[in-house]
Length: 297
Image (cartoon, rainbow, N blue to C red):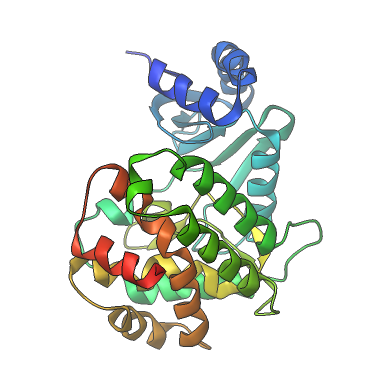
């Protein structure tokens, strides 16, 4: 049975994100995939959901698992490919096999078993996560990347559009979000670092590469700036199970040379409203949500 390349839900999500032109892209997707599959020797096995495009799990003519990512926004593909190329040879980052950026297409190696860390049901492999962060932040940024300030501006602009008029706004005010935005912009521009920042390094974007590979990062939204930005999603993980931010610090610090608790804490405070928007929209008032709301106040 052939994989469904684009369903109604995915189509609606992409049109909401990118506007009416995304409808034409969705219509043209089957022909684009057919051409790329022939060009790169692929058989499409499955399609995965995504907020900015489609991710297709494929088998290559050589029998190897491969992943074809496609997006209607060429700039997203260009920035992702640029970061992955900069990290070429880093064992903790998925590797690029081919690109056709004019059509928003990136072909990457497949990761086995490829389970997201948030779905693995096991404890976080902190030494591997520390090594991942060390690898990606140690690479000299090439010219042409946007700044972390740009990334922060985009994130909070997206959050503002999502919050305004939503269920979450009854609990999380626009004033709180604006205050967090100003804090984040101040951090992004105070000279805190000059590394390639992944920009979306949560446990859903780190895959299990098996015993020989370990944790592997995917789906960067890269910029250049303070590497501490990438730690917020990790040090707050213990709080989901009733722990504290300090528990997160204690877990990652031994595996991350130069760990700066003050800057990481500051990023957690500025990003706390973004952590709770979706839970609040679902009506969740868990201890984690309450702790993030207190942090954001």
